[in-house]
Structures are given as structure tokens and as C-alpha cells.
Length: 104
Image (tube, rainbow, N blue to C red; front, side):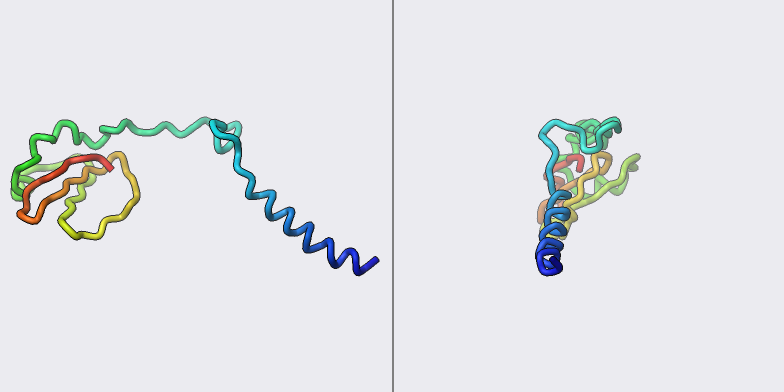
């Protein structure tokens, strides 16, 4: 009897661990019973209103104040891949001109 239990115990443990890997069906809430977390609007950082900055020099930013977190991205600069709808990203080219303004 002991030998069969020794074989089945690891098998039961594996089954229990794999049961935690079950993915819920598509469209179902991640935690049943809790309301979904609202997503901020895509333009939460105000980037659509700042598209006039594209083509201007970086020095233009020195005279401005921003109400949201700002990230100025230079060519070759390491940038985290985390997304924040409230963060304003401004990409520069090698000459220091603004190439792109977007949220993220």
C-alpha cells in the first residue's frame, strides 16, 4: 500500500499545481464579482493638443510647463516599456527636433 501512495502523491501534487494554470474564458472578468477597472482615455496626457510641437527644437520645451509627467526621448536612449496613459512622451531626432508627441 505504501508504495502506491508514494507514486500517487507526486502525481496529485502535479495535478493540484496545474489546476492553478487554468485560463478563464475570453471576455470573462479576471476576478468574478469585482467591477472592471476603468481605462483612462487615450489622450489623457494631452498629446493631441501638443502636436504643434512636432518639428520644433527641444529648447521650446524649456519654456513650457506640463501638468502631467513628461518623458523626453532622445535617439538611442533606453526607455522602459511600461504604459502610463497620463505620461507625455516627446521623441527627438539627432538634431534635437521634436519628431513625435504621444501618450504612454
